[in-house]
Image (cartoon, rainbow, N blue to C red; front, side, top):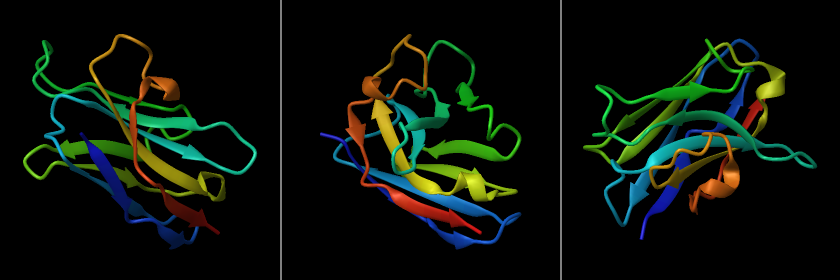
Length: 129
């Protein structure tokens, strides 16, 4: 049974950077697609980035990003460490949110559909001022 724990959140000034980590335990994570989502009070959970499972039919992993973070955020994974990352640069106040990592089995459903993810971390807060 996969469990996820996020870390790396904090407070940063606009224009700064943070790197979030998502450590997996209970199972190797390579066969899971990993998404990063964020949520602010009163709003729906928003898909930020996604990386496809490793070892698929494509020559490399596929990545997808929300329009608001393209060019600023980078998702990556280190299967040897069972850890995923979200590098966030040029942060803006509107990036402030609770950030969650989530895992799902290989799926053809669009990447940013939160109900498709069966495993979630507890979240880490990011505040940009």
